[in-house]
Image 1 (tube, helix red, strand yellow):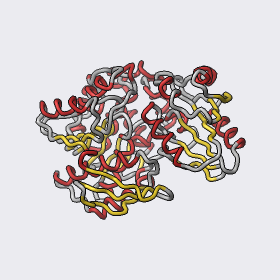
Image 2: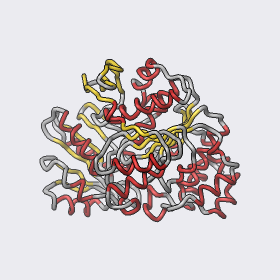
Image 3: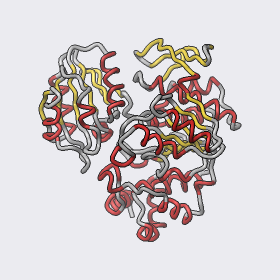
Image 4: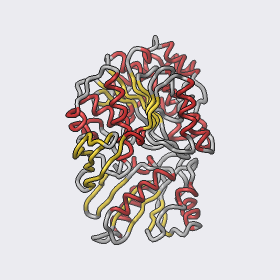
Length: 427
């Protein structure tokens, strides 16, 4: 099989959540456990850090991986979904898994796949664990795909668990309240394993405290212990970081733009404190160096990413109400005359919640990403009109972006977002 034939087989045979949604979600760990048994339990053969949360877990994962890599550790990184290339999901020291490794794995275990019938995500987890074991990584940063308790990644036994925050997303699968979603995310908290919660949220904090107490897991809320002062957000995000009111990191620079990254970096820094206690030698210099170049080191894309200067064009993968709220804050920080908003969403999101907070003065370019889950552009426009938003529809993301950029004046701003899969077509 060629690499393309391998991917075609996987896309056709294995249910893939990011394309078809809930039908691909397996609400138990049975298949993953069978795959791990088949592979002689690779998930037990490398140290790991486990990261869940509604928003920010991707950025947090990439920042931690960059820091560990800079400190000299051979670092695996498992994230999802991918934007351009399936292999983005599985990296070691920033380098994507090789095509031949993917193909060889599928060819070797294809018969067993046909018997076990894993989802696309279950199979991908198994591949990542096997790859990290075979390549003898020093540590791996593992991001959950969906939820936590029943997520395929939850077969690992990490040195640290991290939950970034909780907001409404995937409510059809995880529950339609913050408390229900928090209970699912709290499922990654394990016995005697410390856990960092990025943001203390009054609605759900007791869920994490109770679970951590039950598991005898040391618990800390990053935003209780750390505070940030933004010095600049022009060419890079420059911060003073305080711990217990003492200046800990002066003029810390992040190449990841977007004001919301200030929340994520506090989570990362609290996590580093725990990782150090596990015996990993990470200096302040490693942190400064890594955070200046996260994108370059780990390949992270789509987080307040500039696409062009003329006209000024940005994209962001934020796709739920809280994520889009952060995007809007960022848009308002930029001086511009008029906003041209290229918008596409998927059917199983809180469409009304997102539309209700979008700026009414913008011109919208409604489009549909090239996946079955994507909402039809005309239907999205119809819903948007009900919230006082106006614009026109396009048959593709690319055509919508081209029109927005053609219509934008010299001092205007173009933004592309609403869905990870919309962003995937423009980065």
